[in-house]
Length: 151
Ligand code: DQA
Image (cartoon, rainbow, N blue to C red):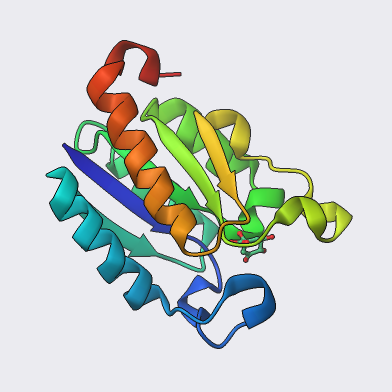
């Protein structure tokens, strides 16, 4: 089983970016923790981060036929990107949306997710651990109910 972990704009700055919202862990540290979880679960992981909407859209399309599930933090594009929403919907690859911060407790514009409707679920506000819970949830879903996983 192969899972693609996608991170959107400015998440390469984790560790030095608003620690009160995003914690102190860097993206490479989060990825290395996820690698350990993937090893425990016996799944393969691929990572990508981009600050560019079109690059994220292209990567989602390229995942078709190559990836079983997606963990995605679209970052600011969560609140604006119909293109990423459409890419996830068209790919029909089960995806879980992750936010480190509790977006519901922040600015009003962060309360709306354009992308969540194309995902099977969402994990918000649990910090870096959210990526791990998303990976575990996705693998369990794909292993136990693959027929319910596609949108
Ligand atoms: C974020 C929340 C977004 O509102 C914000 O633009 C981000 C990070 C999060 O992980 O909490 O860049 O997706």
